[in-house]
Image (tube, rainbow, N blue to C red; front, side, top):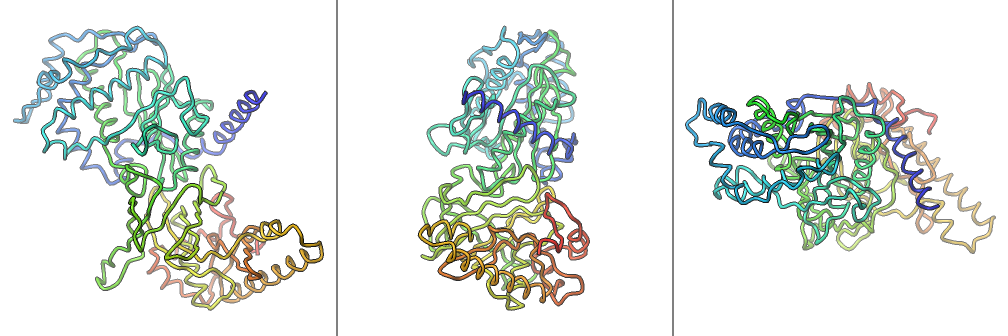
Length: 526
C-alpha cells in the first residue's frame, strides 16, 4: 500500500511540474547557450584542438537500429575521407589513426545486441570511458587545455540513487564521498528508446522532477543540466529558475549500419559538445562556486574590489568552500537548513542557522529576478530610515549579477528567533489568555513596524505568520525580499541602484505588476 501511494504521489507531482514548467521554455541553439555562459571562444578552441579524439571515439560508436545496438561497418574510404577533412588547412598531426591506438586495449563495447534504454545507457557509459582513456594518454601540457574532472558514475536503472527515491538512468557525481549520492550529483542522464522531437508530458515531468529535487538539496545551483538520450540522439536540457532550455547535440550513435563520412562528422561533433560541457568546472556549469570537492563545509564570502575605486569593496562577492574553518568562514551544513518550499520556478531561498564569530546568525542565499529589488537594497533603505523591529544585517552581497535573468544574493542576518506560531508552540504551559496577549502584542508591534516602513516609502508586500519573528519578548519583521518602494517616495533609489547594481527604471516598471511566481506586490498584503 505504501508503494502504491508513493507511486501515485510521484505521478501527481510530475504532472504538476509539467503543468507549471513546460510552457516556459523550448529549444535553443548551442550558440545561444554558450553565449549565455560566456564560453563561445573556449568551446571553439576545444572542438578544434581535440577533433581527432572525437572522430576516433565516433569510429568506435555503436549503430542504434530498430532499438538495438549493433556494430557499424565503417569502410576505409569513409575513414580516409574523415582523416582528410581533419587535416585540411592545418599542420597539426591529429589523425584518427593516432588516437585510435589508445583504444586498442579498451574493453569492447559490451552493449552490442542489447536493446532499448539499457543499450543506450551502457553505450553512454562506455563512451565516457573512452574519453577518459584518451584524456589519460594526452601529454601533461594538453591536459591543462582539457580539464577532465574526476567523476563518479552511477547506473541507476534498477535502483534508486542513494539518498533519494529517484531511479535516474545514469548519474555523474562529484567525488565528495566514497559512494555516489543524490546530493553530490553534477549532471543527470535520462534515456528513452525512441527519438523525441517534442518531449512528451510524461518524460518532461520525470526529468523536471529530478531537476526540482536537485534545486532543493544543492544550495549552490545556478541551473540543473539533464542529458536526455532519446534513441540515437542526445540533447541537453537546462532547468533555470525561470525557464527550461533544450539544446540538441544531434546523433551520438549511428542510425545506419554503414555510416558515411558525413554521419561520422556529425557524430564526432555531438561527442565534442557532450565532452566539452562535462569538462567544465562546476563554477562554469551549473553552480556559483567550485563544489567539486564539497558542497557542505566552510564558506567564505570574499568581497571583490570596486572596479572604479580600488580603496572600496564592491557588493560583488566570490565564494570559496574549504575544509578548515577560518575567522571569517561560515559553516554551512545541511542539518542546519531551515526548511523552505522550493517552487518549481521563480524566486528561491536556501536559509541556514549558522554561527559567525561566536554569535548566532541566519544565512540567506536568494535567487531573485534581476528586474526585482535586491533584498539587501531594501534593508539599506530600512536602515537609512531608522525603521525599528527589523533584523540587523551583518553582511550581504551579490554572488552572481545575472544568470539566465536571476541574480544570486547572500545575506548574513541577525538571528531574531522563531516565527510567532513556533514560539507559542514551544510553550505548552501557557493558557489561552496568555497566548492571546502575546499574539496581540506581537501583532501590534508588527503593525507599528509596517506602518513606519510604509511612511518611509517601503512596502513589505509579503506579510505572513512566518515573517513575524519572536525571541525573549522582542518582535521582529523579517523577509523583506518581496518589498517595493513607493512611487515618488523618500527612498534614494538612485543611490541604491548604483550600489546594488540594478536598473531602477526596469525595477520600478516591473515591481508594479502582480505575479504569483516572482512575488505578488500589492498593498493588499500590507
